[in-house]
Length: 135
Image 1 (cartoon, rainbow, N blue to C red):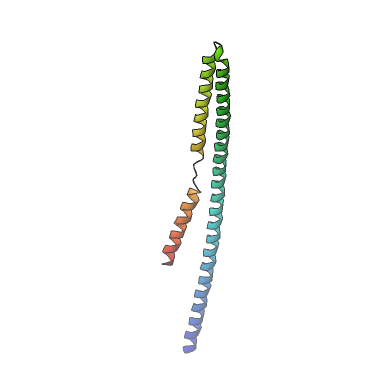
Image 2 (image 1 turned 60 degrees about the vertical axis):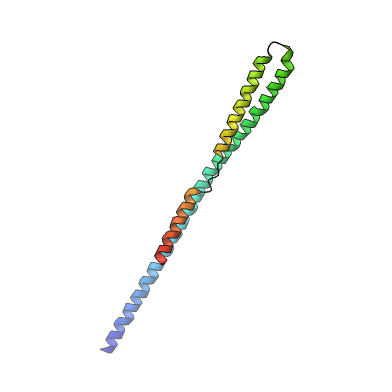
């Protein structure tokens, strides 16, 4: 009877060991899948931020171009001060400078750094969940 009990204990401990290996393998596979998903999300966010940065750069270049044109028109207004068209040229120059300022503000607003907000939030949540499971 003692031998039968030992055989049952050996089989039970072998089954428990196999279950632990299976669970560990599943946990590892889930961790890999989670890692792949986080990397994919980070790539998506980086692409989005790169597009925003490109838009901000384009707006900044546009602002600089308008600013340059505005100053050139104001210089032309000074040159034409002796003629009757100087006020019109000055207004055009001032409008170009105002447009340049608006484009510059739009560029600054478009280039706010966000530093992978969703990815960081997801990673923080995942770490918190892992800590809860280990406690």
